[in-house]
Length: 213
Length: 213
DNA sequence: CGCGAATCTTGACGAGTGTCAAGAGTTTTC
DNA sequence: GAAAACTCTTGACACTCGTCAAGATTCGCG
Image (cartoon, rainbow over all chains, first blue to last red; front, side, top):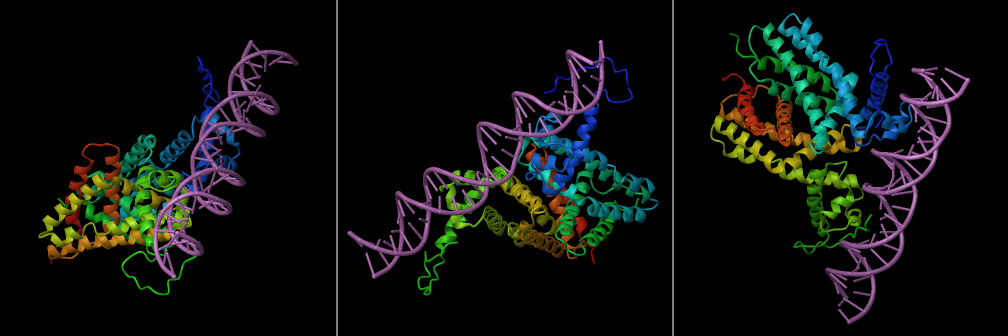
């Protein structure tokens, strides 16, 4: 463990007191995410991760205690940037149908652009079913994803002048399920997997609303 | 590869011509499934699999060419026995509500009794997103699970004297999603995860039906 | 029984793993 | 500009993995 220089005087708020550390950690994480998205949790070795970066394989233990700590940091880091993916949709939608369309498009878009990150997430969540030490992080991320979906559904109900007909966990489970199927289909090269996802979302959303009050 | 004794005369249909091979493969698979369900795909080594069985670690290559061939055989073998889990529900249900109740109970039951097998399945499906060679088997199994759900939903609609309102892939995706969440909650020791699943299914099913004709 | 085929065990191999310690290189501080 | 702190590289360690070959054991049939 590094000697943790307790900086008594945080006098220079500008740069590089000891959060240079954090910058490096982020840089390492960003590069590690590329390899992890390509190979998955089990097959991505620290050497391979380091090879696809500007660092050497030993540096990992300078910034992280453990391979597991690195991976958890990576996924937390990624989730942080993507939990607000649909905030724009929620903010800009002008009608229920508009929101549905934007939401569907965004779902398709993220599969095309970030399929490796998504499969990594599903990989990690599955691993957490076996590895106790992953569960806390996975549970937290899952919760924040549920909240994200809840914001979309709530806004949708608001625009439709009614209430959601189902609790947030169910809505999240449903969308996550169809999303996962679409991702699988996309990775399998099945034509129409993405168009199907769009249609499914359009067909599904109206069913989530209580009868108009 | 074993010399494949071409038995010209299949005269003894009773036992042990060369399908003793198949019996052994099944026994090995059954024992391997226990270890795989405990450790997952990546961490279950052939030695560990063999240790938890009556065989030694070398025998695997007598019955399977490959570790991958063993795993795929195992999961195919398991799926075969569980794709008809809800056939009883479909056959015995006397009313829409009765079917929903039985279905929910069965879902909860299988989580309690076969959680390791389910997490193994999700593990393998996630791995197939990275490992090309797993995709064919995973796609087939996923399809047969979708068919299984379709039978339940169709029978439900039949009993309610109407039609399903959503295509089979969507229904499967939805139920798979909420089931996966319930499994995660159960493995995390979250109280009420199973009761929630039951309630969610009861609340969800009626929404899958078209308005009564 | 006895012989040959089928079945299984044992032990080894090379490759790959996470981890860490020793030291080289770099930056900061006085 | 020297000393101290920080950063990073290199190389080795102990270990596990899948695979396979050589031999022991068991089985089935003449």
